[in-house]
Amino acid sequence: MKCVICRNSDIQMKAIEEEIKSRGDIFLIPMQVLVCSSCGERYYDRKAMKILEEMRSKIEEKSLEVKEVGRILRVQAT
Image (tube, rainbow, N blue to C red; front, side):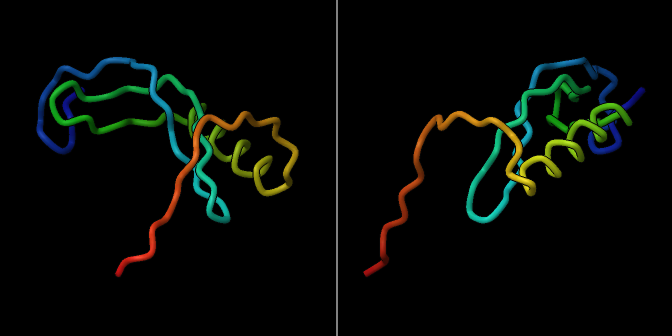
């Protein structure tokens, strides 16, 4: 398999954190996906897409146990 972006053939399975944004919150979903070692392009199989869809549904239903890991603060521009 070659990367569709940079044509590099070094694509490996890696642990990543996918972001899902919902109502001003960002949820980090740990996953294993194929990643191009040159440009970082990610490749999601059906199993990974199903996990993301399930996580999005649970987030919208507020039925997902979450842990706060940080804060984002917005500063008013002057």
